[in-house]
Length: 134
Image (cartoon, rainbow, N blue to C red; front, side):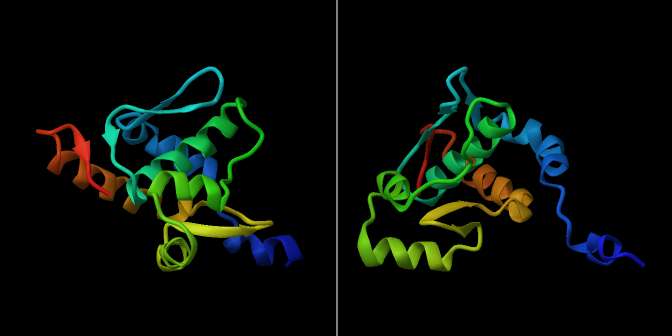
């Protein structure tokens, strides 16, 4: 057994998962030719907006529009209206967001199905007002 074979079970094929979930993701966002994330619904500041933005960043990189799929605490602060300790607590408590080093975060696509389930619940429950509460 080679070293590569022994570690194969640790490999996560993110691209395959994103391809499978593409129809669900397309309900909530599109990526323009500049690589900007364009939500298809009004999402109020908070975790849903952060998750949608982070998901869009990964998709924009995969589509070749951007070279970066991570965000800074400043980006997250703008999306949540939180700063300092409140922001730190939010990031530490959320399993859907992971720290990847150098002061940057990304969505944990291992939980992509659950993230989309949560967005679906929020979007469906607010479809009358066209607003997702964060």
